[in-house]
Length: 304
Image: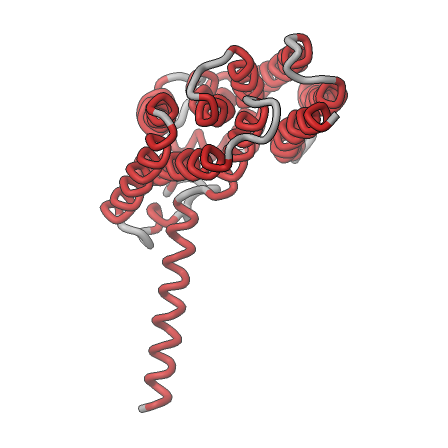
């Protein structure tokens, strides 16, 4: 009997641990972490020295919880599609490990808590962050994703907002420099996501999602990726030209953006198996490096 009881306890603990990991997976923690990095950079660039601790803590907490809520709602809304795609078939809601109502309650709690945290700072950042959540969870996921192959171009604005949200969390005001940070992420998003869409073209076709490689073919998508990476080089100059950032950022930005162009050039003129996936993985390190360069540049000149 004792042996059976121990096994039962072990099984129960294992189930609880697995459920905890499922709820964590619903929040897309790696995506949220990247969004929070861009928000943190927005916070730091908003002021000459260090941003106030209260704004940083409550701002990152609120932006993180609202972003996590949007991810949870995305899991719920996309569960039918997720079951048809190899990349997403094992997601918790798609597999039934977390029920739809449980996921909605979890997402709702995150949304309310995140909004409350940001409201303590100022109403502008609270409403802007909530608008970004609606833009991703409803406008993009429910409508744009299924309506047009330009879905990620239009819907990408929601994912580009965190640097602006971080800025507003600290200052309570909108600023043109913050919009430049939004432009960087907004221009980066289509080539980043289209590279993944090429890699998963059959999945998206099977699920009936009109991603660009499905509706216009890989060759056309490769052309668009190249054009957007070239545009990213131009947009990358704007923080330096506007005086928001200095030479450290400019050198890092130019190197990273030209690296992205190099991947895009190969996709267009020397494509080979697996290159789209390599491009996608590089794009993740690219945006990470870009915002680290912004932060390093700001810290250098703040301490000088």
